[in-house]
Length: 131
Image (cartoon, rainbow, N blue to C red):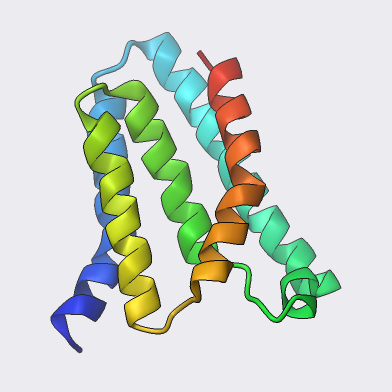
């Protein structure tokens, strides 16, 4: 296992820890809203994965639905929108993660971009409604 693959494998668990750290700082009402938004977001990510597995949408385009990208995107958006200090760092870390996934040949740039483009509008909508 290389440092690059170890870093890529640790990225999402570290995002979850960051999410929990900022979640604990919220009021009880905001915590509930954030959990609802998180559950809806995860349902979307894995629902789309199941849909793609059934209908072969991405493979029909010679691509792969990137669950790695989708899951990371959920947490990066939440952390960025809930903490102004992370507004630059979290998206930058996501781009580095995308580079690592490309470098390690986990996913192509097209896989990550199309997955992100499909999910971004809905994830932003969920976060906007969850405020």
